[in-house]
Amino acid sequence: MIRYTILFLMSFAFELQAQDVQKLDWLVGKWERENVRKGRTAFEIWEWNDNGLAGMGITMQGSDTVFVEKLNIVEKEGSTYYVADVSSNSSPTYFKITTLDNTSFVSENPEHDFPKKIAYKLEGIKMTATISGDGKAIPFLFKKVD
Image 1: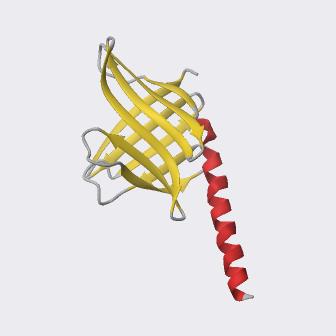
Image 2 (image 1 turned 90 degrees about the vertical axis):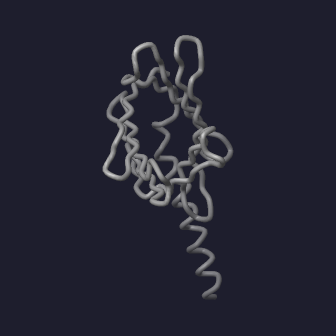
C-alpha cells in the first residue's frame, strides 16, 4: 500500500510540473529584439512541440545570419530545464528552472562559465530576457510581433 501511495504521489508531482510548463504559453510566438546594435536585427521564436517548448534565437546583419541559438524547455529526470545549444559549445547547456509563474521564469546553472542565470519576464507585449552571473547582467529587450 505504501508503495502505491508513493507511486501515486510521484506521478502527481510529475503532472504538476507538466502543468507548470503550460504557464509558459505566453512565450509562444515571434519576439523581435529591441536593443540590438545598429544594422542588426534579432528574434526569438518559440513554439510547442512533443517535448515541450522549442525556440530559436537568430541575429542578422543585413541579410547575413551572424548568430543562431537553439533553445528548448524540457522535462528531464523530474525537473524542468531551459536548454541552450550554441555552436561555440560542444554540447547543449542545461539551466534548471528554479522559479516559474504565469509571467516569468528563472533558470540556473551555477557550474556554467557565463551565464549562470537566465531570467525571462513578460510585461504586456514586451519581454525581457536577462543573462547574468559573476556580477554581470545583460538584458535583452523584446517586443512580440507574432
